[in-house]
Length: 357
Image 1 (cartoon, helix red, strand yellow):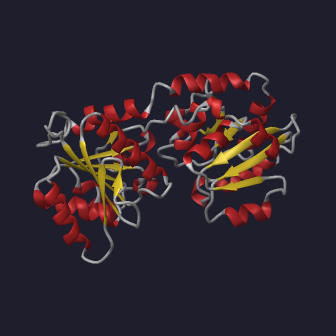
Image 2 (cartoon, rainbow, N blue to C red; image 1 turned 30 degrees about the vertical axis):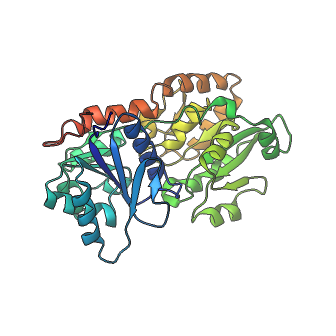
Image 3 (spheres, rainbow, N blue to C red; image 1 turned 60 degrees about the vertical axis):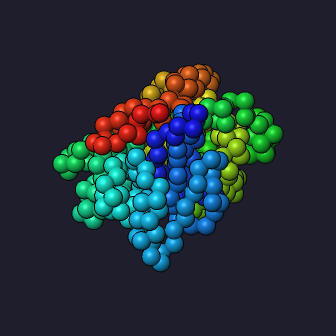
């Protein structure tokens, strides 16, 4: 850059390092790619943590005088764009202060809370930003039904971290007690009721399988109480640990019908692991039925168990994983973030954030 600064982008998120949430991971990847391509990046977030992420300064805000602090931070940084991910207390205030300072704004909504466009969300988010993007086609369609215009931006996946070579036979042997006839079927994600995790009881009943649950959350006690003792619970894992766990599975299941980013499905595909998911939510954007996995009708009782049983019984199921890897490899984070810039940063009135100096 020879001393010429690139466009300044303030990334605003409620969740960032050291947290391991899907949103935090997405923002890290966006920050990485923007910096690689010449952008000057600053992160505004809440919670304790490091004051820097690689070359980006990280500003953290607590509740006292948060609006005033955010106003001063944006005024001092003078970004070309304020990009807010799933606005909460920090994000909503950043949108309001950016408007007062005349800074263009973009919101990327990564949660399903906007499904029915509740008035408070519409007022604080949809009506407060210059442009709104969501990460799943079904959510864009729901917002359109409510009269709200939104763009769609699909996340990427780290195909180096999530790779078939991460498969660990020793780990799989632990899960199956060394029984090579057993198929390791796993769920990866937060253990929340809205994610459909109670349907994992169906999966645990499929003969010839060992269920592995990767993640934690409020439903863990319910699951531990009702699932067989053979089910393995790993708890929450860091990205590289999660990559090894996913790659060591034979099949991944995702029962949630309102997924948005569908990170676990993308990561399984990158690890060449076939998936079973509902014909609903973010799975429709990621899974090609009978091409990279199997989609089942979530309204049909025991359809999940039947779909898992069919994949488990298929001696050629590895081909689904191979096709999934080939397909998802075209959606790296570099590709995804470059598309974000070209299709969404560029259309913002008054913003120079799509023009790298």
